[in-house]
Length: 267
Image (cartoon, rainbow, N blue to C red; front, side, top):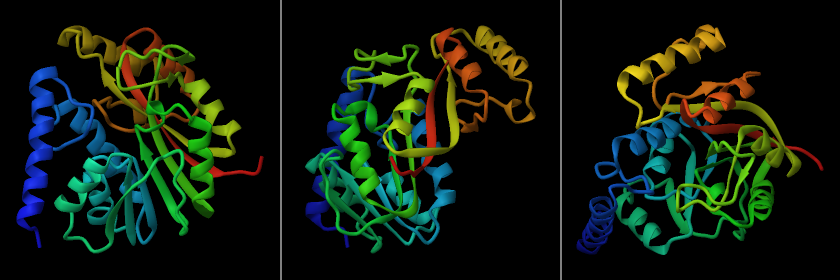
C-alpha cells in the first residue's frame, strides 16, 4: 500500500528532476514521463532487450536508478527476483516508494565498487554505470565475486571516438572508451565476452535529409540483412563488424552504446 509518506517522497523526487530538465534541457537519470524521448528510448530498449535473459533468475540490477528497469525485469522478463542497487539514498527511497507493490523486487543502497552481498546472482545487469566510476577494476572484481558459477554479466557504456577519453563531453562521465579498448578492458579483468551488440542512434544535430543519406551509407557499407533497419536505439549484434561500427562513430555519422554479454573466466 502506498502511504502518504510514499506519495510525498515520489512527488519531491520527480519535481526535483523536472526542475533539472527545465533548467538544463537534459536529464542524466532515466525517469519515464519526464526524461527526453531519446534518453527514454535508449534505457527502455535496453531493459526490454535484456528481459529475454532473466526468466526464473535471481538478478542484480546494479546502478538501478529510478527502478523502472528493475521493475521491467520482473514484469516483462519474469525474473525470479530482482535486487536493485544504487549509490544514492534518495534514489533508493524513491524506488521503495514507487515500486513497493512487487514482493520479489527489492532495493538497497550500495556502492558499485565496494558492495558485498552474501547471496550470489544468476545474472547481473549494469547499464551506463562503468563510465561514472574511478575504480573500474574494483567494480569488475566485485561483479565477478557476486556471480554464481557460469552466470552472466550484461553491461553497456557509450562509445567514444578516442581509445580512452578522460574528459568526456558528458559532464556526468569520468571516462569513456572506444569499442576495441573497452573489449580489452573487460577481457583483461577476467571476463569472456560472449556476444557484442551496438545500440546506435543518428547524430541529432544533422538535418533529416543528411541523416537519411548517412543511414543508407551505413547499410551499404555493412551489407548484411540484419542491418537493413537502423532505428535509433535498436540493439544490433555486431559479430565481426566492430571496426565498421567504430568507423561510423569516429566519422561522426552515428553515436552509440556498446552492450556486452559476458561470463567469468580464470585469470
